[in-house]
Length: 122
View 1 (cartoon, helix red, strand yellow):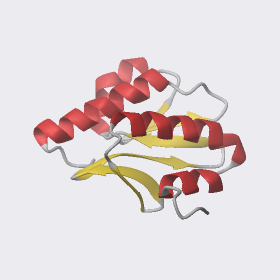
View 2 (tube, one colour; view 1 turned 180 degrees about the vertical axis):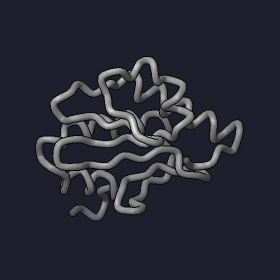
View 3 (spheres, rainbow, N blue to C red; view 1 turned 135 degrees about the vertical axis):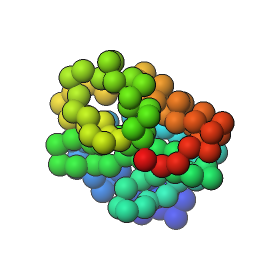
């Protein structure tokens, strides 16, 4: 581990190899939405924070979960057919294409919701 590596980059390096391309892509998307966000590992998952937790993701053996909060998922629910949804989470198998545009939209929505409404996590 490098002294200059972010905790999220280190997390991705330790994740299942087959998931690392998806994890690097989602990390880049989320970082681009709010580049000034604090990056941390909380509850064993990477999080981005700006006064509150903005969004998070997690690596598993065969999939990743993206946690943009329930309101963000509800807003784009019709566009997420083909993906497993949980309470506040979107599961993406590593053999599925990453819905990059939707991830960006949900992350941007969450950032606006926090900045404009002081929206809570989950």
